[in-house]
Image (cartoon, rainbow, N blue to C red; front, side, top):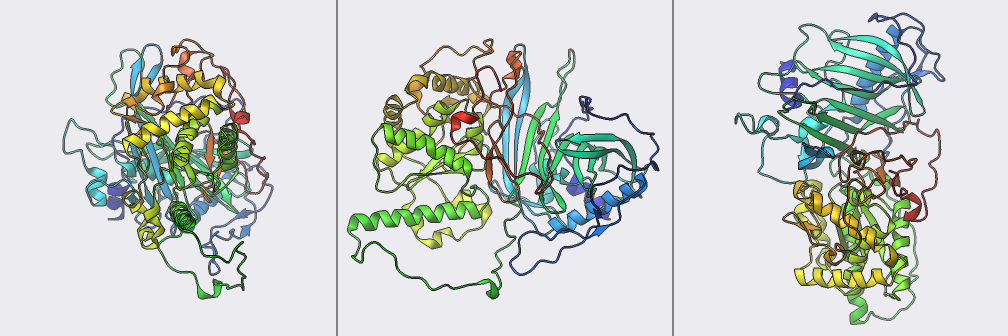
Length: 604
């Protein structure tokens, strides 16, 4: 019965069983002997290997305690036993967690010049309950459906394909219920470095008659704690009339002793000559917000501490009507920022905010903008290209920062929201009433919204252009024009990426409307010009810590563009994070200006 339940819930649907291709790693050592029960000595670990245990948490403690240690293994059989045990230990540790899970998918069509390009896209966002059911609640509400119908819906119609979000978030584990020697064979392949972490590589195959929906592929095990850090493969065999995705799943060492699922990449389709694809797509799944509390249980009373405070207000006078209005707007602004952060949609304040703040300050100083309250900037953690402002806080999505090619383009995006603030287009004052913040996280998009009327959008665009022409970015507005042209070229195929959920859309009906006056500036968009980088792929700027949601700038070396196909504007690409151990290296300081993190023209 357990096996049949697993088939229903774990089915990663709508996939063509195509062989995943993987480039050989130049650092990989020679493969070892292929015996499933290899007994050659394992590489000597640098520390004792932990055994799984359910960490006891003190009241109010958020991070699981690291597991106890055991003697290091001396054979590959012992290594296999250890990483099986560690996997079950991770499942127990994460069973109380409900992280946010986001999947962005692009269907692909062949272009003779650019290769496979997006033809249509889909977007899913929800909370993943990692308990026994491993269910999810969607932030983007459609008609209510049971879990089973969400998984299997759409396949009663023979010629209609529907993507289901659960399929993209299931490869957080190889097998949640039956990952053991009774159901799988394990063959040691080689040693290999993933970033700074040395790994042992194993091929995993399900045993005959072990059931449907078993993991088939390769996994990487780090050589100190013997935790699985990467899974690459699919599930096999598939139930009748359904398919499994091929997926590449990565984990990060964000807390002592455990590597938690963070990124999943999936790709299907073959664009070789003569091949007809039933389905071709690329998809990224990101998981974050592990430290968000499950449910709404209050902390223990012993955690409450009341300190004596004194009133340090600069005046003892009553507030004037204008002052009262501003304080009311500030209260609403703070309520919204706090609520979006607790829902796992807004990154805590950090280095990226300071970079954004520098650009806003440049606009303010050169335009002699003096506001009664400072302008703040925050990062929305989601992929859709979106900005909005509430009070004096400007919010810009991670996805939009990712694809912007330079600081001038970032300034253009921020100038639009700064213009709303300067023009007094204040939104969100109703959220000063705290009862309006009392809703479930998955109802956030149904309870919050910051969209301006068309007249205010037009006025903000005009004011933003004036700001830019008087700013340090005045000589670089051609780059902004190129970005808008590239966005317009791809807009008809990127409806989900351009669909905003809290603010005004950048494009409507496949037509870019934001800052349209700048879209005619600059040279014509020419994909053959390798030094013309109009927009970047998704993931090019920002990385998110999946445990605490902190946003950091991606630090990569420039890579030469050798063909038009290397540009990939607004496209989904695979994940290859540089793996490091928890606490091994302190993170380098983030760049102080956006210009420091922008790639040179012709590089990416």
